[in-house]
Amino acid sequence: MEVRTLAKHEVVSAAPHDSLIDAASRMQFNEVGSLAVMDGDALIGIITERDVVRAVADGVDPATTAVVGYMTPEPVTIPEWADVTEAAATMLRVGARHLPVVDGGRVIGMVSARDLLELEAESGYAGA
Image 1 (cartoon, rainbow, N blue to C red):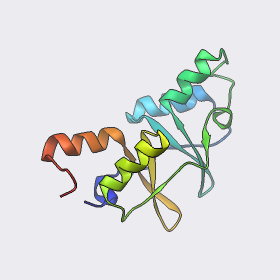
Image 2: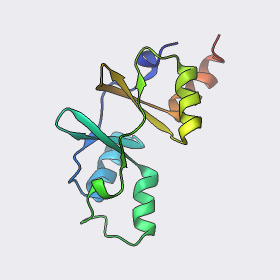
Image 3: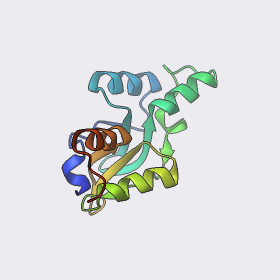
């Protein structure tokens, strides 16, 4: 199965100057665990729940700290035509739970480890 069929196609994003509290609120409202950090149409990073927790543990004020300070810059992406097993292997290799899905360099969705687990649980999919 190709990643494009599994990915969430409504890309929820943040700007690099957005505060961590705004990013966390956006994640909660949209029920997602990560946001693509966009500078115009360009993907420049990804901010996750773990990044927000790390910032709080560091003692920073999430209301005044910008996303750019805690995002992962230049995140690993996966092409839309890649198989879901490649997405899982990539997540394991780089230690990520979210991958932006791209079509010719343009972000068209996001796939998460949870999406892959749901696929496995619902269909018993094992790459066959």
